[in-house]
Length: 493
Image (cartoon, rainbow, N blue to C red):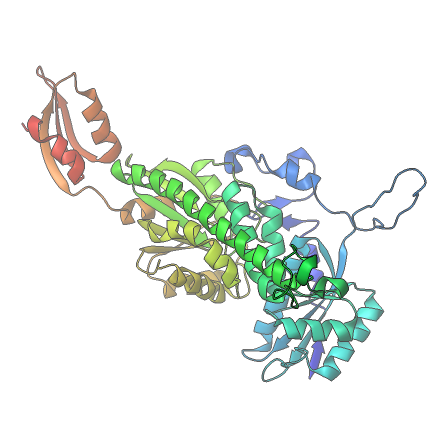
């Protein structure tokens, strides 16, 4: 059974016109008055650059006038989606296809149609089966599409066989996500991680075209080696594989060096006794919005999947004055390519080394529990299962109240917030303060007035219970961490 679903009109409405941004701000146009205040999001330094690169539909890619200058204009790819529904409910299959449509639009494509086929398992030859693949070809012809995107990772043989039937380019979900990452990576580390994932994905999918499959010449034609060295030589595709493996090895060394640099920074924060809070969650759940709300970080906020990839670390403090750091991480998605998990492992380890995890969930999503499960599966891969977790149900202002209540009941530590209205953010700040490790050593010291540095550290790192200025100095009763308690030993009252 094959079902075609017109499920993309609402997706298009959500990404144009009156739509909520990643943080839930409602935009009614592009005028400055409809933009969110800098108080909420800080300086959106990347927004203008991202908008300048936005692809515009309706532009031709043909050469119009080759007598003077060749002009090639960018146009949107026209795509048809294909999915095999082999487990779960039809609603789950439709939600997955909607997510694939959002991924395609983020990558710069125009989604025309989508097909869902009910099968026990995908066909080993053409993914959809020969008859259904021919039906897909008819849809591609009728819609004028130039690309087919499949909602899973295809084997190289499946991709080639399906392309032979539909006669247009076929890509899978993994290639689509890698393309989005390649567009949005900004930092040197992010670009290296994405290139590594792309090369690891490409390596088993190399294909020869015509003369590229020819072999290098043997005998005297190759270096003048003469008799005994003649043979078929090395094929071009083998040479490509060797070059890719060499590049992969270099990228892994470079990323390991970048990890050392980040570990050094993290170690200095640890040495100063500064706790860390990591923000993780499903893509487009509002992680960057919450970070901007709590710290004014100015991280880019857009209603797109994987709008921000590069990790951001910002300082903040609890209501009682204790310092800690916020670390934003890359968003997750169902069937996140394992190449990306491996390439971004050093970045995701920031979560495993944190003291507290803010797991942001989109309360307005049709399947928030599925989002939570997908994120926890990735966190388990990087060894972050033992980190204390707070579920942050974002977009509570537009979510179904029954869904929000259900999530709050299911999770032990959970809070509902709205980055758009500010609802629940004070409760979130207090919950962070309660869950962060607090100083546990009581001290009663008399600090000379010349040791204001120690008094400042007690304010920053500890919890002051009582303070009094006397003739000899400042008498302080406080609760501090072990490192600071050792330095205060000589000043006990």
